[in-house]
Every structure is written in structure tokens, then in C-alpha cells.
Image (spheres, rainbow, N blue to C red):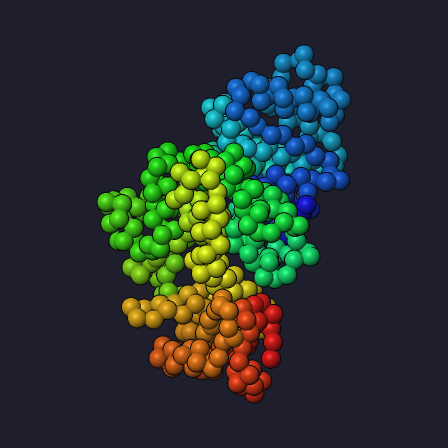
Length: 461
């Protein structure tokens, strides 16, 4: 099933329509849907898709030649003939129309044939750049994709015409996977799978969430049982350190000093590990949205960005001794008791913030909103704050995932905060609530055009 990715497909189509040649770099963590995106784009086009393996360079070359022969039926490309990369690219791209050539898992190719990126640079400069060809290089090993294709020191630096760092499917597209589910059911699934297409596909619409979790995550040997192990082992050395950091964060630590202190690690060393995980979109560094120089801010906090990793390190990793004995009952009971308060409510806030960002971009709250994020100081925290181009707060919002309607008290707290920290006027207020709002607040919002109420995600009032 192919869901979303309109922006990414649009980028690829624009490159395809480009007059002459184009070189596109597609990268992102494993299971994120890179291959599916490329194959979707290549449908009905004159194209060749090649998946590199960790075999030797000569084996990859022979496989590439075999695919080229299957595509063109040119005698020169027969498997018994010994050809080089230059020869195959030359024969593939002599046709009158545009040819799309996609090399997936390019880092494997670069590892098994040292110097290939320099060789490909020469092939591009001397041949492909002058032809009607679209070359796509794709990979999951993010560090190597940088060093081989994007970094200033890369032989291919400056040749790309576009690049796509593929992120997770946003919640706003999530219903495409489960069209029959309610918004609350979608949120619950999303809080576990995140927007990783391969994880999403494992969850069955007819099953209850806990049943899907047991089958796909908690059962020893199931697909997602050790997924973070594979994910981190593929990208990093010292995976034990990364595991310790993520476990500490899943337990609630966000300040760099607190994380490094609990792990007896220097903060400078912690930054190194965090940067690697941020490249993979596993972790994010947040600063108050009003900060004018976020990179230099000393108020930064680290949070696990990936919903699945947050869930796994909170509910799976600490209970491996039970799960290895195939005793899932205590873990399921732990999830049943604390899933909503200790996990789902945090994901709800993040989703509400993302939806507010999308609505702001669409102009719902007026013009001039530069960005949406969180805000906090030593005493207070606000879940949603939007600022103008001068970093003045102009939107204030909160989201409550609880069993009773939200009343006027929450709005009054936001109004007080706005008076204390905002120099801009007028100010917009946005409230999200799982169980709706009191009659008093609903009546108030109908009289005020700067108060927006959303029951779960649907606008009311």
C-alpha cells in the first residue's frame, strides 16, 4: 500500500521533467519506505532498478549487467561478456527518451568496491551529465550516504540536482493505512508504530491494539521484537552506549546534564552520540520556540522523537527477562495500566503540535506565524506556542488527553501566560481535548474569534 509522500513524489517528477540529466540522492533510516517511493515513481517509465548487496564489487557489477541485458536485450550486455561500469551506463543511456536508473543501498556498493564514488563522478562528468538520464542513488546507512554523496569531501559533491531525506509518514496521512479506524484508534496505533510504513503494515485492522503489540513486538522472534537492536547495529558502533542513552531518555531524562550524569559520561561525548541519532530522526533536540539562536541556546532538551523507539525502550527493553521466558502477561498488564498516561498522552501532544503547524501554514490563524513549537522556563511549560518572524509568541495552545472535558481554567491559565510573556497583540488560543469541553468554554469560544477548540482533532464550536 502506498500512502502519502506527495511532496517527495513531486520532487522526483520535477526532476524527471527537467531538461537533460538529473542526479537525485534519496536517504533515510531503514524501513522508512525509500524503495517503495522509488518504485512507485518509476512505474510506467523507462527505468532500471538495481539493489546493491554486500557481496563483492564484481558480483554487483555482473548483476547490474544482467539487469541491463534483461532491459535492453543488447548482445553486448550478455552475461558472458566482461564489461565495466562505464560500458553498462553507456549502453543503458543511448536511447532517445529519458532513462531512470536507480541504485538502491548505494553504500553497500561503495563499501564493496573502494573508489567507486570517484569512478561514478567521472562517469557522470564525462558521460551521464550530457545525456537524457535521471540517476537516483539511495541508501539507509546515513553516515555513508553523507560521506559518499553529500559531504563537501565527497567525489560526487556538487553533482546532485535534488536530495530527499525521507522522514516518517505524518499523522495527517495515517488514516490512509486504516480508513475504517476512528481518530482515537489511529492515534493509539500511531503512538506505537510511528510513521514507519513497514511497522504500520504489520498491524492488522481487525485486531485490538494489545493483540497486535503482543504478536508483532512482545512475542520472542517476532518482526519488531529486536528491531532497535538491528537499527542501531547497522548504523553505529558502541551500540551499548546508544541503548543506555535511549533507555535513560525513555525513563524521563531530558536535560543533557541529567542524561550524562546518570550515565557517568561527559556532556561533550553525549553530543556526539545524540548527533548520530538525530541524523536518523530517532532523537530531537528542542529549545523554547522563542529562542532567537536555537543552535547556541543552553536551554536545549533531548527527547526521543521516534514513537516506536519510545514505546520499545519504555515497555519492552526493561522487561526482556520476562519476554525471553515467553511470559508476556506482566508486560501486557504494564502496558494496559500505564500506556495512556506514560506514553500515549505525550504522543498526542506531539501530534497536536504538528497539526497546529499544518493549520498555521494553511492560514487558519492568520498570517505571519513563522514557526510552532514548545515553550518553557524554570517554572512553566506550554505545549504549543507559535511565534512571528520576530520570535514574539502569537499562538498559545494546550492539549489534554484525559477522561473529562476541559474547562475555562485551562484557557485562563493560557491567557495569563500570554500576558506575561507576549508583547504581541492580538493573541490566538488553541485547545485540544480528548473528551471535549465544558459548556462554558464552548459558549465563550463562540463569542471569540481568537479561540479555537478541537475535540481530539476535530474542530468544534
